Amino acid sequence: MQTAATKLTKLTNLYPQKATSAEEATVSATASASATAGTYNLEVSQLAKAQSVAAAAVPSADDTIGTGTLTITLGGYDSGTNTFTA
Image (tube, rainbow, N blue to C red; front, side, top):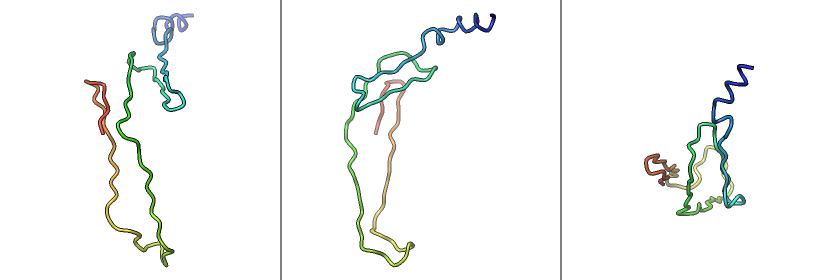
């Protein structure tokens, strides 16, 4: 009985966080138990572009295909302004 009463004192048990999306087909959302309640907006500034490399057959798996550098950059999150950056 005490365990059940203790659970009732925690608001997260009475009102768990729930995340929804106005565009479920495009963007999905989830919320953890420690999520801060609020309204969050997502703005897409640029769509990803597909990349591919095609080459003739190479004699060895160790041969170099193409030249240059591939750089993958991940953005960041600023909790002060509640924004993501590229």
